[in-house]
Amino acid sequence: MLTGSDQYLALLDMEQSPHAGPWLAVPQNQYHELQFLKMVDNVDWFGVSPGLNFVAGPPAEKILVGKDTLLFNAAGKSETTAQTMAAALVKEIWTPAHHQERFTVING
Image (cartoon, rainbow, N blue to C red):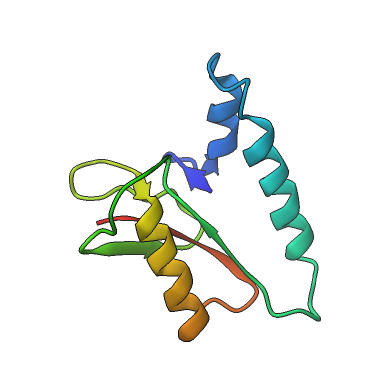
């Protein structure tokens, strides 16, 4: 996802964090997977990215959806609960809106 006024890759911030070591390989590999999927044109795929913080919790009453830019809600938080992510996945399966692209979801 892109962030900041100059729209740079948010992964770069994660790579600079001294606390990212144990889990950094996950977003790095997901970024490579997304780059691969963008070259695939014979499969109907979609990808979903959470906000900066992905936490356990109930679904949000309001779900914010974006594309390539890191989302923040009105309180300035970029957080997605597991059940919000699940709700977004189910909605996309039943009513597809993102053909061969990644989208982002956060709690509104």
